[in-house]
Image (cartoon, rainbow, N blue to C red):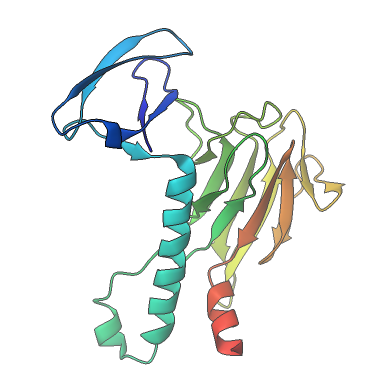
Length: 206
C-alpha cells in the first residue's frame, strides 16, 4: 500500500499501487477538504503507509546499531569515514487507537514534541488523531553533562492535558532528567525514551 498527501489540507490518502501500471494517471478526491488532484504512477512521490515506514525505520535502527557495535574496534581514522546513524537516541510512540507505532530520532538541543499538522513549527512531531496531544506539547532537551555524556531533560510546554512521567504530572517550569526506558504520557499517548547508548549497553551484556 502507498499513500499520497493532499496538497491542500495535508491529509493522507492510501491506495494499492499494485493495481495500476507505470505511467498511469490517477485522480483523487480528499475526504477531508474535498480537493481533487492527480498523480502519475512512477512519477509522483509516493510514501509507504505509516505502519510500513515505522517497520522500515525500526529495521534501520537495529541494523545501524549492530553496525556501530561491530565496527567499534576499528581505528578512529577508519571509523570517521563510516556514515553514522543518529547517535542521540530516539522516542518510540506506542501504538494505540489513534495511531501506529512511530520512531522519532532525537537531535541535539530542544526536540519539541507534538501532533503533526501542516505548518506546525515543532521539530519532533508524530502523526496522530489523538485530540489530547497539543501541537507543541512538551520538549526533550538533549545536551551533554560535564563528563561528556548525553543528558535528556523533559519539560511541559504549558499543554492543555499535561505531561506525565509514570503517574506524576510535571509541574510548570519543572525540568525532569529522564533515562533510557522512561515512559512519559501526553494525553492518551505514551512514549518511551530510547537513549543513544541503550543498544550498545545491551550488546555488551550479551
